[in-house]
Length: 259
Image 1 (cartoon, rainbow, N blue to C red):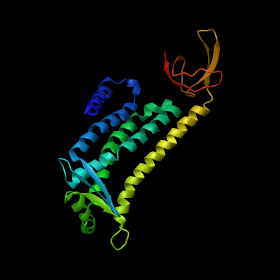
Image 2 (image 1 turned 30 degrees about the vertical axis):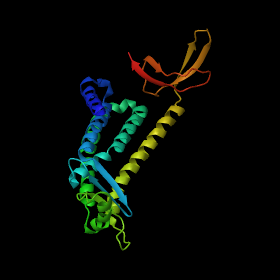
Image 3 (image 1 turned 180 degrees about the vertical axis):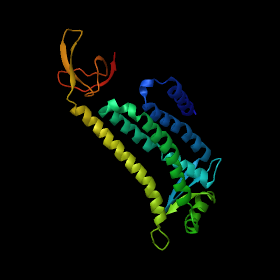
Image 4 (image 1 turned 60 degrees about the vertical axis):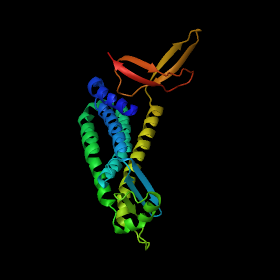
């Protein structure tokens, strides 16, 4: 409950109190906050149960809403966080390498993240669940004994997949439906790893640096280098935080502001 109200307050801050300098980045922050608002609500209303049994898995609800539609909504919402995180890392990478072009991403981020992903993407995942995970009679016969044994026959309105029939034949619809979700997660993780590695390499290989001399309280002098975003800084003040002072080159977290 505390997290829910915290995220609602965060939504308010992003919409009404955020600085215009955030630009399109606030749309990503807003998407995360909104996702963290309605995910716990959907979870509370459905109270999902996921159960694997031999060559099948099923998902049903113990909550207020127990229909296949409600559990499909939960599955669609659950698979949304990783792609959102991937969008965030892509934006950070672009901000580092093409900071001068960020203003052009304002409309693109709004269209891709808020419209296409949050609404159309979730709708696609919902349809994938409610259509391709709709249990047929063979799936029901396969999992009914385990439902009767452990759940007292509950979960009649479930979604799930039986990957191999009792004859050992591949059930392609189940594989394709699951592959869709696996592809979303695999692509998202790959994008995050690629962008993270690219960001680290960018900082390590940056040639532009500002040489700064620090005079400590005891009179000792230390030289160190502060990496800058090449080609994107203007004359102004350099604000430093968490600076590690040493006699060798070092990397620090920084931001630039122009006069």
